[in-house]
Length: 200
Image (cartoon, rainbow, N blue to C red; front, side, top):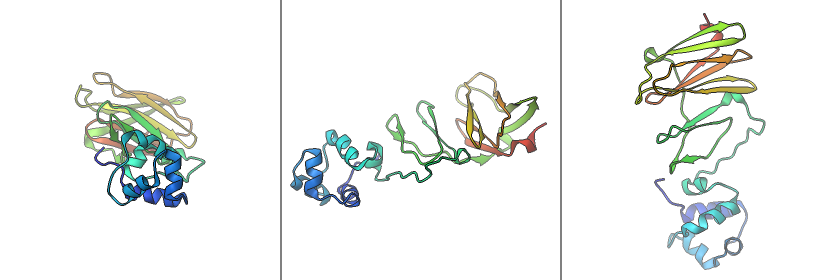
């Protein structure tokens, strides 16, 4: 991560929780003078204090460091607002239906932004009884490949992980699929809305 928790962030979070400097200090086991120093930019919390500070404010350490607290107002979740996070180091894929603060290999991940499929990422969808057979016209080399395909309905997700030197094809159940996402490790996330229109 490219920044460290600042006193301004601590002050903002403390005031949101209606805590005095002394109350915060008592909760994390430091003096109120220490809190004052942090908030006035004359020092930083020791790394061993990040976890207790984050716990007091009910946020993750990643949120504390970045200064961006995530508030998920969408309590009921909506699968059609799905977001995908992909680690550029290991290829780990995370899915959420709301805002998420997550890091992998020390990197704060941001949601991928889906684009419409282009000439280099052509998709064909064929309905076979109760399944969609999905093929993506794309090489599957070790350094350039389709990493996953996900079919989203209003109440669920079907995700299939793909690997280099395999075939860029999957089968998913038709049941209410409204969006199909696929991810190219070099060119990013692509989305097909209403796959029925593309179905052979």
